[in-house]
Length: 411
Ligand SMILES: [Zn+2]
Ligand SMILES: [Zn+2]
Ligand SMILES: [Zn+2]
Image 1 (cartoon, rainbow, N blue to C red):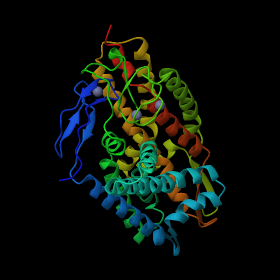
Image 2: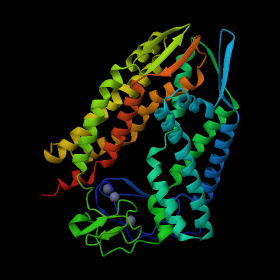
Image 3: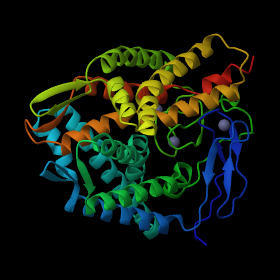
Image 4: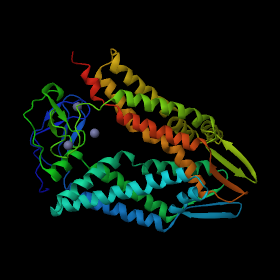
């Protein structure tokens, strides 16, 4: 049994604004919001030790995946082997600076910061040292978490291999397997991080004003959206984490709509312009996202063609339409229940980052296939606009305040 007790008195649900009075909890129990069933707290056994183990192994795996060959490729007797770092830095040397920087940031910088912070935080909590640093680390973790995409990249690498199978032999290096280990350890560490539990350890139980199990706003209270403490509406800052408090995200619907408009505009060039330029025996052929899907279909890779079609074409459109509809619902409510709308919002929020697959496919191929006029792959103009679509829709989903949906229920 862990020696940490957990007796947070009350917390506000981020998705429906209900104040939840938390009963004393035992190890390996879970507590979900009584109105919207959002998971609020989970108490796995030996959380700190597990985080140290998985986070530490994740970092070790990452070092290993940077030290050996990642992928190798051969066609007609000519071959090339790249390390993980080379496969990303090719984009920089080929003057796709923004795309290369984005990749390095999302696949290396953010996950390294995340793992280091998680491990350091767990260690400091275990040793009960330096509360100020603990707070800083916890803030870093909370901000980085939604932007981790290494698992999407792994799927992108596999799709890239299927795409190339008719033209070349591709084999995995030792680093590829340690990269898989790194992804698994990172996912496991993410699943062990619980915002409420960590804030409780780092800054103690929130000093909650007297509250009952009703929406926070109806009691003159606010749920801090950073640490989920219950705060009085008069307080400009959360007493526990110091974050500026606001009952609802200011101008949430307007910002979401603005981001959606920007995303829809970027979606047009993303589909019309080529996302990838393949050179084979001196002939350069550009291909669009849909062109790539048809090519995969023609090769008989039906499942992969369908995955790319769904991830790159349908998900962005569905996401834009769903969020636009949810914004519309804030003004003109329909007969659909709030729970159904919230379900739609949650799906939109969690599938969004998978649209990055095609970007990662192009990046992997660019990193690997560089044989000059014989055979090479470069990103096309659509790659940037497509990355922008994904990032803009992710930001739109984040700026949408689901609590506004529940406000409509009460007259
Ligand atoms: Zn809730
Ligand atoms: Zn707070
Ligand atoms: Zn805020």
